[in-house]
Length: 181
Image (cartoon, rainbow, N blue to C red):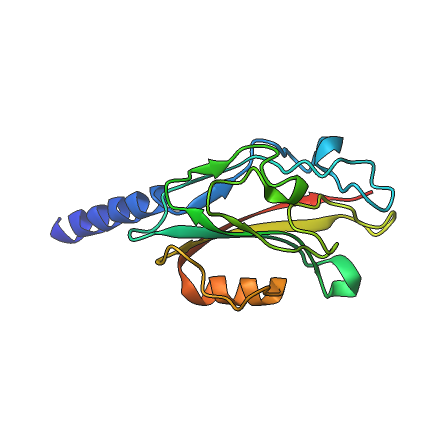
């Protein structure tokens, strides 16, 4: 009887831990369906590079800021492509509204830094896989940081931002959406 009770307590503890896991999601994308406005605004993609809305919950205790990356690992023959980088997002943020990462990220929360994506400009650049290349995976990763500012060199490359965020993270949450044309 005591053994059974112990397993029951452990099962409830595991469920409680799962319920408070750090998560990120978007109400803007559903079942691989992206509204055209979210798609890239170059190379015939037909979009406007309006950044999708993002929401997150249950960050780790001690979170003082966030860093966000959007990466397509399928692009460039498997070398990948950076679509969006933003860091020093205040810990008080529970998400990002639609469009805040567009046009250089000027509408991001105060103090947020918008990094240069693979198209050579700051801010969000929407999905734009080559026609016929199949579905690409767009991985949004949110890093919860224990410091208010991400430690990076001046004008960091996307790779530097990603490595710095990962190495300084208290926790991370990611969600992947697909798109192909």
